[in-house]
Image (cartoon, rainbow, N blue to C red; front, side):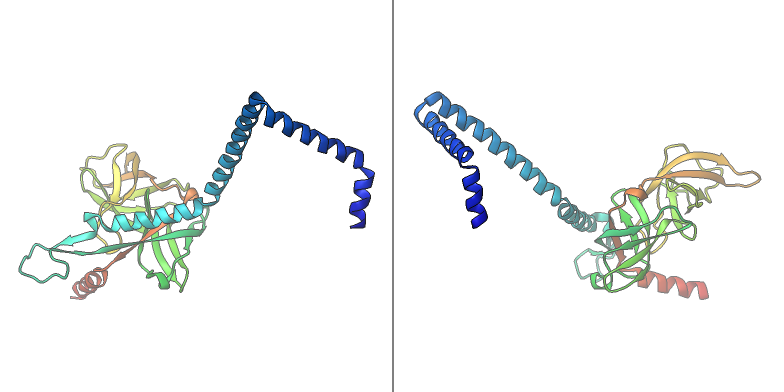
Length: 276
């Protein structure tokens, strides 16, 4: 308090001058129409500018929540698509939801760790068993295939990335349905190789490569990439096809984890058949 009094006494001429200036300004604005309208117009513009900047800042800090909400909405909408349901052709059989039952369920998750510069790249998600995530589930983004869940804890899960030389994805050419196996060669994160496509197949640069649907992990038709180059392998009856991946793994933020409600039944039957 003593310091405050000393400050006033030391600068009382300046403070008195500012007080008189403010009083004079108020008189001019209150008793002159032109100055009053100019003042209110300027103050409104200034207030609008401040409010606009404040709103932009608030929206920026809300982007994370908005993106998470959009990811959840995309997962829900993808689960409502026709491809997620298996239609029953036997109208005399009892199916719980009339003529169809949902085969694929999509759960949104956020990428919290990711690598692209190793031979065995993995991704960490912020969802685990508490959210229904299990090993062996497929992982995709809005742009295409990302990988397969390998290990799960209560709140987290790790995904073997498509950029992992140990992972092979059953793939096919969308236009002709010729299928093969897609595998990353450990080089650039933008490309992978598609093998097993016979030479009598018609393959062109720009053809879409999608999931074949021949596994219990991914539904049919999920985008993987586009054909970049096509070469005839020496002494082989198959093409060497270079595929440009549709997913940019360096910008991966949100993904969807695919649960197949009929996976256990399919895998069990296939294992029995293999052992016959």
